[in-house]
Image 1 (tube, rainbow, N blue to C red):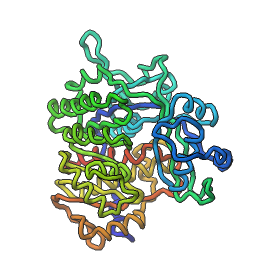
Image 2: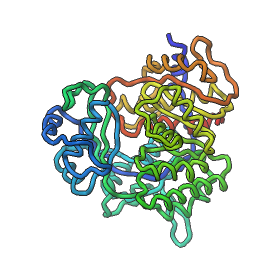
Image 3: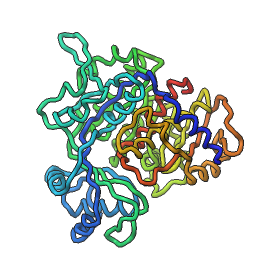
Image 4: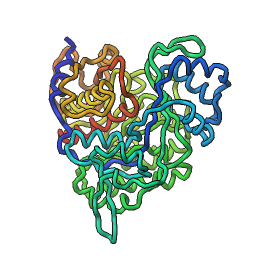
Length: 440
């Protein structure tokens, strides 16, 4: 039995998010999911052109990018112009799900917290309202300077909400080139739209922050071309939370940005205002190359990732969390190594429950899981033994304060029924758990 196994046996019987007060912004959308078939791939072969521009404009651009994701087994997110977006939406059959980082994370945390999560409402149309009806998501509403809290689905209007098109593909599917897809993943196609900051949410922050344990900001890649003003407002929201409630934890969830100016603005103007940053290995590579002045590396070793995370701490955050296939890394000070590891394991367990169930889980779903840390994660933790401040491999878990990087091998669900948004949920669930366990 792996030395990590007792950690997972322990956390799946826990609910570290119970009672957690959360404010989560900024994006709620409808994810329209299509499961890619071999016929879909074969049909696209005739359209395959050269590498597409940043904004996809025709079926050929889409075909190239989907084939690239298949060959690499990687997840990508790209924007399409309105003509192509509508063409794709009409061409394939989709099933609708709750989408957008704020809606997914808010729904997840509120289920485990047993209390409503306050979110930033952005264009809640009737279809999204129906999807959110059973979730404990609340939005602040100001009328005649009086604050009230409304269930988000009650705010739906006839204005058209945003949709993301998710193309899920399976391990072993044949690419156009003839090779096999090495890993199940997805391509996300977004429309050319942007998040509109809700003024009621902004004005209510000083009041609702008083009962807040964690403020989680996400979706900043959808702020549009006038991102500089939007980023300034996001930073001010984090500052407002901390002034009203210095004990609250502010956490920023990164989404892949291809625009170097946005990345630099994010790092210089937003990072210093947040306690914690969550990202995946691709996003870490983009941030590292921006700070280093070079091209994004095609692949970073685990040691490169440790060094990159430590350099990001110099920008102001106290904690950096990276989730990757089979393992997670946490950089920064901790009051309790054991509780930080438990928080990471809890976040991984919650995500495994969603991947197995095919929908966001409930607390009781954790107890039904069979969790084992991945062989890949165990190997990486062992390789990093000289860098990681604490490794339970072969030594047992000891509780202590520490400053450095922790590595946790995470379980891998072989045939997940849900993947979209789950990596970010590892970060957000674990930061909430750390707050509730007082290890931050």
